[in-house]
Image (cartoon, rainbow, N blue to C red; front, top):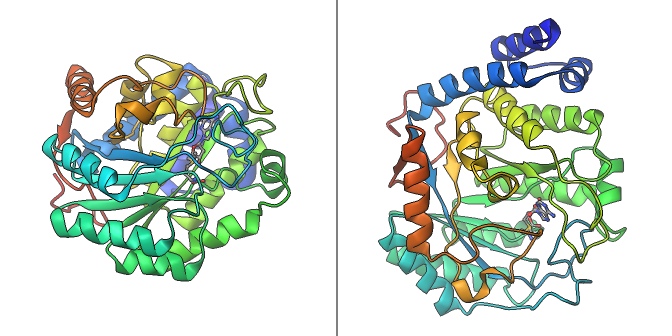
Length: 356
Ligand code: SAM
């Protein structure tokens, strides 16, 4: 165990801040024992705020049509091998019906950037879900839109929005995205979402090509400043039909370490153990929870389309029904001493909230 890493983890725990040089030192020199040390602190924090509860969000991947060409992503527009699909509004509602039956109280609507789903159309879908299930939260993950569009959907009842910033380092951003996409617009979207009162999620892929410890230091400083209510961190995994097909996977251990550091820095954050983490290791999501994560996002998409929403090779849970996914997550959590909670699982703005 490196004395320096331990000292920096302790400093982060006390001050909820490290300066950039210290982040670079910490992320450059740590070992498994440092990671386990951070995980123990992270777990204690998570349990103090959220108890042993794990919040589940049912994700409906309703379209894989995308106008963007992100170099890492399996549903990028240039992937001519992707079989494209779109769910109808009724089909999306049917996924929520099934999810509600299974105990989900948050529905995450995610898609590629697909102009067939305008803000008006989404607002209508959100209103229908909210009318039918007023006790549920609606989370959107539709990519970059304009302020008025986010506003319309917020007014229709959307509660949360997931938009990973992907990297807080502009030079790195340019290496992951084509020239027509802009770092400043993605950052503006995040600011817009926060200002509209969405519980807002940012995040990164760990080990994305060209990522350095300096990039990760910038990500941690961005999280500290922006204070997202949710942070999505998963390993980068290559997809065979993308320019990054031959790039290495992200590190499993570093993903776990970063989850713990996020929990220590932002104690109340909602932190998913992602599907990518469960893809890189069979017990990745359990280990994510044991490193401080408190959210899991099982799939509610119809099994007929699951395999078509292939962001990276080997994505898990593409065969199972919503019911099977739920049972599997319950069993996995029980095995490590946690319990899946039937609740919206909102961000706890106060550690003494009644979420428990
Ligand atoms: N279109 C929306 C957006 O841009 O936010 C939502 C869908 S997008 C596919 C969801 C997330 O998947 C991205 O933010 C990215 O971090 C992640 N992702 C895409 N390709 C990936 C890959 N090869 N490995 C791991 N994660 C990936």
